[in-house]
Amino acid sequence: MTQSATPAVLIEDLRFAYARKSPPVLDIAQFRVDPGERVFLRGASGSGKSTLLGVIAGILDVSHGRIEALGTDMAHADAATRDQTRAERLGVIFQMFNLLPYLPVGENVMLPCRFSAGRARATKVNGGPAADARRLLSRLELDPAEYWNAASRSLSVGQQQRVAAARALIGQPSLILADEPTSALDTDRRDRFIALLLEECASSGAALLFVSHDGGLAPHFDRALDLSEINRAGTGETA
Ligand SMILES: Nc1ncnc2c1ncn2[C@@H]1O[C@H](COP(=O)(O)OP(=O)(O)OP(=O)(O)O)[C@@H](O)[C@H]1O
Image 1 (cartoon, rainbow, N blue to C red):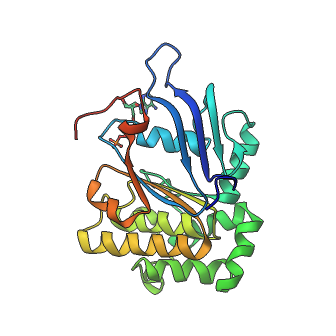
Image 2: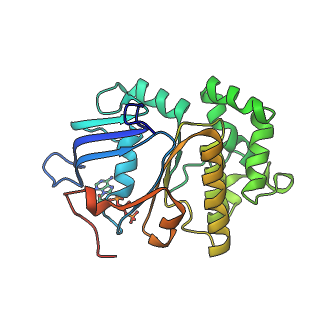
């Protein structure tokens, strides 16, 4: 990977606080994820992992510093541009899943293809949005014959995590941001889930930034670091 390729994530001189007068949660001089790189970011509870992903995804407004996701300036772009970048090029697995509870599983997984023609097109190699959604659900051990039409709110937390992962992966986004996506999975399923996530990223060339407090997952990744190594704000509990 050359240093000149557009980074998947580039952060310089970032400071972020939730309110103007509160101390920063994030104070990061430099952080970079290369295209296709799979990075594990560990951090204690409350240390700012979800906040960092929110900033990179352009969900949280940043007033100080440089944040680029796939070359888009997420600190200064208008909300519409950030939304478009997120819809077309990012797959985000939120900690709270953000599934639409009354939509069936299949519709939830295909949602990114409704918002982005590019992601719908990218599923063609796997037979289109519905076929690709079924493929991903099967790989995530959710039998589409059983779950395709089920309301997402009727699923267990671990099952909802896997639906959220399928939704993030569909249509080959170039950057996956994953926030504790294995917290409700047992050890065997967790390892299979990570293997699948890494395989899908490898086959599409996507970069992956995976955050978790579970340092045991680190060996699966190209690179692992602790948020405290890059974040001078240093909030959070001792793990
Ligand atoms: N919406 C918010 N408004 C104000 N403060 C917040 C908000 N969200 C998070 N915080 C604070 O920011 C800090 C970092 O929170 P964050 O959720 O990013 O940590 P985390 O490392 O993801 O934690 P966990 O592992 O427990 O999910 C915490 O002190 C938290 O209380």
